[in-house]
Length: 462
Image (cartoon, rainbow, N blue to C red; front, top):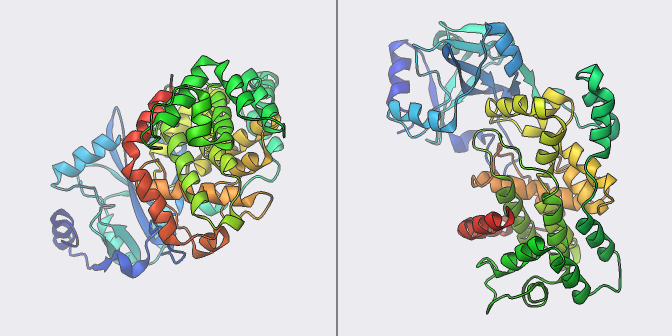
């Protein structure tokens, strides 16, 4: 059925003229392998918010960020997005699997971002049916006649990457309580010291004479780290024959020196900061995301032509640390981390780094890359983390950043990590020397092994 009966009944009862457009006809925003997109300003998103006073429906353009603070101020309310479970319950109450981007409930107040009133033809996605509802502006006005109009969104085109990361961090800190600036700057720019084990691993990485014996001895001095490396190599994901009884076995028989040294480094850094106790609704647990991204990076690198492959170990490390900025963000700005979480929940269609720039003036990737620079981490990893959201980045070590972008989008497309699905252009695949089929094969393998990978992540949490 192209559109749910509850939608067609309401349209017909209000005498609203509309067209049904099949998804394939308009190259929708979430189509993974497409550079041709419908203008995001014409796509309408529904966000359902709530507070102690009840629920509120908000309609916004897909090319905009819902400024939750501004909307709360305008309405004099303390709103936050409903949970994914509440969305499912609300959909079931209408006899649907997924809620369409359509104001179904007349009993709930409605607010419409004013830019939608001048956007020409508008497109409302009908849940997961594969169809869009196309409404001319005059017909959309009939649909929202009982709603209010307000200016509570920020266009995503207003966001540009910072060019001076250190200055951006200082500027971000200075936006907050002046009495805390000095202490916050010290915490921000110095952060925790590099763990001793990680420091020794970095030294070993740059020692051309280092071998398996030195690596195994170093890792085994940290019993927890050694156990994690052995459990990683013992995972069904790697299907090693026989039992893995030591770090030496893990290196020689399964993973190899380069992968183990970077795995050990990533694990050591991952234990430096505490996991936030409260994150956005539906957020992928930190270690789950780290594992998914690391093995996806591994698969993509192995699928690349041998003459174009970057270091497998460094790509793996970049994957493990890809969301390290999430920990840094929570550590540096704890009073504002909750604000960011609430904003992410209200903007599931927006990349989190843009939301963080809006709230703080800085994003997790900038923070993480600056910290990695302070810790003298490999430049390849620093640049990969910093530019992973910008596939057009052409600076140093752009190959690693591009691989991270592709990994994240593939993982989002199959629902393994949180975030909007953005297109991967043919040019990106050309620059990596990959075919789309290669990428699909890699992500399908990750999906097939997701239970084993989740168990690997559980083992890393100890």
